[in-house]
Image (cartoon, rainbow, N blue to C red; front, side, top):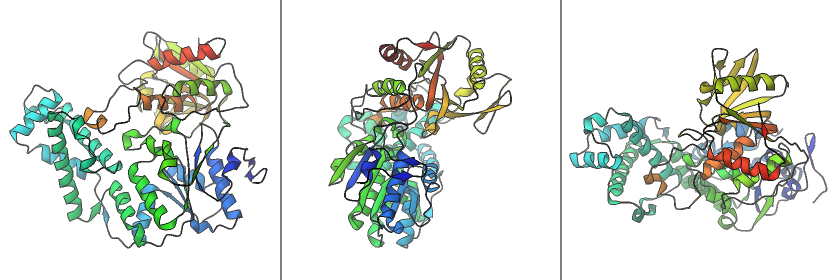
Length: 483
């Protein structure tokens, strides 16, 4: 292996360089700001430098934005860059499989139709399950009804993305009443499936499921399959990759960070990332140790926090930058006044600023008439500051970051909305409480290059704030507060 390798104006570090070979399936385990995209681009350049035909390289990522981020940094037009859905559509096109995309409101329509025509016994079962003491007719026009419809949609979507069969559902985990509700859901699913079949339509999960079946009808010639954000993979997507692997014998290179796995609600399963070396044969593991965004002090605090979950993969991350104020605590009694005072201060630094909330609408609780919001931009005294939910901030960075709503509330951070037992019992992985919320908080605090400001009610801090304070006290001389 050569001693250094240049990608644009940067050189790969000694850990990133370990990927510059073409001999085996590989998992690259990264941390926040560890240069995942640079490493992927370096790998692609290396393969082409070593005479691999660009048309034999497939690059997959979770979203269009992440796919385009990689694509725009490369000068090759004949590499296949896809999201999983675009990949599935490409395979079905090659296999000459004709279909239409199902209306995205079809499942919701079928659920409403089905629930409006239930027998009295099934109506009683639903009311009993939801612990609602009212008539079924009143239930149908209530907020609880809309939540129940959402639960059914979520269960069906998660069931599909986990590539489960009816026999895979651990029925022994469910009570008799829950089994009655499950039976209703499966009947809805059957109606939904038959409706799609009769109209030759597929939903987005069907695209991936069907593409896996039709890989054998195509002549794919991939030698390398590179998958970014692999911690966000579902079993349905994994099955598609395994089918391509079976028919092409391509090398599988996956890159991701289990500490940033935050999409379980959409069917992603962290176990796939953690068990990569058991899923594919002849594999090796590379850990990217250096991080180029955060200070060493922030890395130490964030790592201690996220590793309270023993399921996470241990990493020893290193940074060349240092600060004595990686996290700054902002307790408030009047959130609007404190937020405005903090903005006034940070704007004078002329550094890039990013505001994050646990929920999309958190920002509105901190504003008065001096502010306007337009297209995720907070407009204040002639300045435009980006506001995003933490989920949407993944992959982004700014010199300073403000995290709102770090309160001990139902919709605080951690968010205390829990899945129904119908969904929880479908999983059997015994993660600690708020495991995904913990990873999401890790994502939030590691968006900064300099400091992250944590805003919380002085009288009601979240358990994450209390825990972070204890960790910070052990690792720094003193806590930093914004006054």
